[in-house]
Length: 386
Image (cartoon, rainbow, N blue to C red; front, side, top):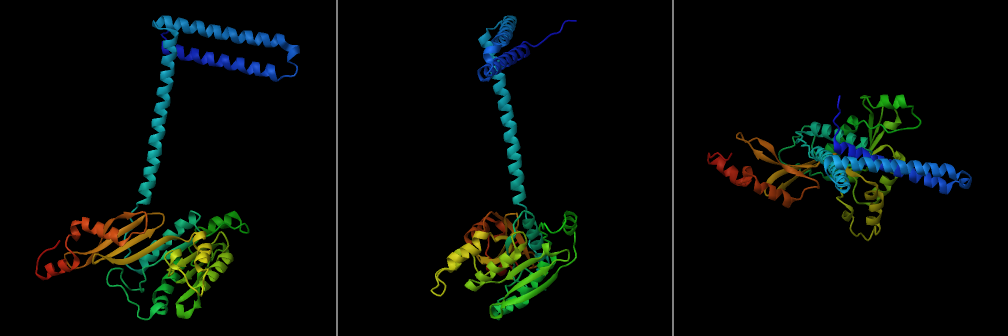
């Protein structure tokens, strides 16, 4: 039986043999240089060098034979082998690039998941609890949550509550109830060296409600510290500071709560009255307020992991939702044929959206071609504005 062997394959093997021989010669030469007793065993080293030279000679002879069989020179054969090697490297590079793009696209799809508009306080709490738990699972133990301040039976759509009673009323009728409901839902068990692994693992699946208690910080400010004591152990306790403002007293309180909670347990800021470090500005009564806020709050994280913002843009009722780890989801309310307001998804944003961004999106959508007052006039005249 005659075996037909690819000349290209022979060439590849030959060059591999040559590389092996060079490697063998290099290693043995290295041993000759580094071994103290080299002078006493020169004969052995010479025989090893002879063996390597013989291998190289055989490889060269085989290369020449393969080149003759294919009607090419040795240089051409070497070039072909190198080209094949380059092609293999290029194919591998393409595969790696495609894999990287798939991973990036997967991340993009994950970050742009659409979060629906919650209809009321209960559905808002469900979304917030999920976002807080996802962030905690990713190691974010200092978080900010900004609720749409709804009363328990209030719908998300409709006119904003003006809260004539100020901060005390907001806290009493919305801030405190929403926070207590959130802490009743959240399960955030940290790793605790004093608790064995089996107990820690079991606590992750415990849905026994924690004991939730509220303690006023400043009654006239409508601020409080609310604590959830977990049923499965203190490693699941959670604290939330409700509606703190830019008075430096709250910086001292938050710093104290931070130390009390420790580096592994969850501490939340609920609807703080500041937006960023510039909210402190200059105050002659607290000249270091801005610097202290940077140290106590912004240098320690307190990322917004859940937020529902309601506002007006171009006369339309708008809503923006952030739910960790997804991007901001942007909506505007539009009346349907029956006059019921329904949220229309406009797009998403990596950063908290501005009013100008909303105006641009609204102007680009046919549903909002006419402004809200014009649509109302059309309906009053019996015209269909859909």
